[in-house]
Length: 352
Image (tube, rainbow, N blue to C red; front, top):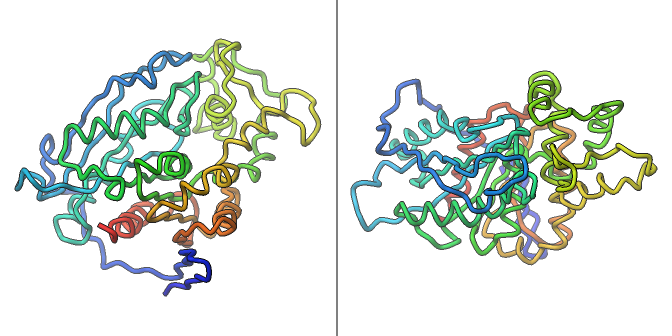
């Protein structure tokens, strides 16, 4: 059932229920490694020269649809998938299990045929937030320009923006929203699963507590060794965000500024303000015209998730008359993730 409110051409849905036939994908798959599932590398100019010295050679995983090799003339829509925070390298590998299951669904005609590309958005800090930063490299440019051009040159894609989507989970959902609004000439559709965050103000107390009394590691190696996502998630995430949103080329070896380091007063911290200014909610007003040209915007989050700022972001879309589809699922951040990806891909493929 869907509730549609549309008095000003706003596509606004709250989807209250959604069902699938039972998924039967097991451990075995009909996918042929090296044929339908491939890896391709790129020497990224956008990432080259990043101050922390991360590799600019990046690999992506590519899933080709079951009918791909039956015709040399068929063209396929493409979805670029962005992973979440926490991996310090090879984040695209998180998607492999799901990609093989998506292949089976396509073969069973339960999911429309498309090319799926899992991009690597990792950094030594544990994630790029898919932002342009001198500390870690220009990930927006790398994703929206270099990877798209690379994939279009290698595979039978339908190269028009209306046949191209960007989507992701958590940090990847955050990145998909921002890249979609900035590169609406490249992507026609955007999908965000528990985009984290869409409004960062709800995380202020979390990061402030994590950074209270904290002393910066003396080296990047020390940060990786001592500040682990497994044991200090909020602190590790704060460093990843700082490298993306408040880089400082004059401060080696980490090349970043952390918020709450100095006594500027509760509302005057300029570093925190940089984080606020670079969050999706703050960017809506600047990119509202771009957002209004997108064919579809799909957003979900769990009813137990309270610090993503999703509702604030959606209200801002409504304020500017920007349509979207919104799904609230029962659960928390990672619950039913595969089903949520399938739901999103089904939605994105409706126009194809």
